[in-house]
Length: 515
Image (cartoon, rainbow, N blue to C red; front, top):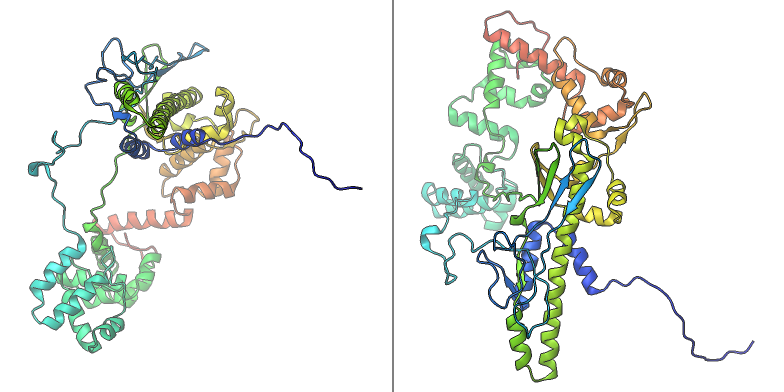
């Protein structure tokens, strides 16, 4: 067999992820906050993109306009038919407008807008002093202020600053005193004396090395650290088990006194440092809103506040295109226009895809919106993808970090997807979320004389037509942070006896205190 070199032509088909397609996929799975940051960066980098404020598009700019309002309208709506109808009508508004400049090429507009200037920002970009928010002091700042006031000796101040640096966010001392002594080249006795002083700082319980010491410092601050309390803190494991007999014996108190001591312990703060947690909680802005219509159906709309609004300045593009002379300048302008054009199209495609998926979810979970969690249907990504003719991965990206506000509350889109649990009678399957909700209702309604075990819950659910195993009931119960039947019986019995002791009734010795 002879070897030779030759040139062949072959035709093959392959899927190529172009940069534009990668951008569209990236935008699809972004949350509203991430999308706003991404578009903000694009506006800074592309001179042809502009933020659309409340005044609408200027002359020579391309922007979506609502003929009725005269201002850009960012969303269409999906209308779910009334229960008696079988059709599903999804209407999208025409959001494309022609450029007003005849010299500029036709460019799609964007109905997606940022909100206006942030609070406190003036027209010149400066922030007024009156609208500057004050910042609450952190735990470290609060402790350092006390170090400089309460510790007079310079050595104690230095040690106190090092001890403050070892305090974690809960207020506990995370480091070792020996390491502080070696680092500062001083005796361990001096460090321990300084620790005893800073343990009297506000909030009570700070600089503790464990839970017992934290509670002891708070009781000492109240003047309540008695011998019985000290013994009780040494036996917190017995208190967690609610072993009243053992606690009464080791503490040397009666059942009533033990119940009052346990009640006082519950008023203490096991993590005093968390009171200084100043983390700003981000408010969830829903991407989709759902509300009922007069015909008995549901109207699905995109939330315009969650959609960034940008436009392409066609007049500026036409101006710089005429002024460009070199080949590099013309290539740069063309690239900017193509990038801006594709970004606007990607934002529009993202909005319509979210609306399409959300509309189908509402169609599938109409019973949940009308009657509550107990009527939720089992649903998987494949069901939505088949109904709207999309791939499952696209539906998965759309439902990630997207939220829907309904008359029943605010939910992430992924909340509506739950696995199915078979019916015992061979009928329609049940949603796992609906079964979990039914288990919660059963346990909330149980009485002290009839505490439901997992096996009894299985029997009740099977009588209702739900084929479920005991281990599944246990898994759902644990996911809802509900204790076992034995622990719930002990808690209920302890609560009843605690009330009886406060009313002067005689208390048996067997059950635990009302803790």
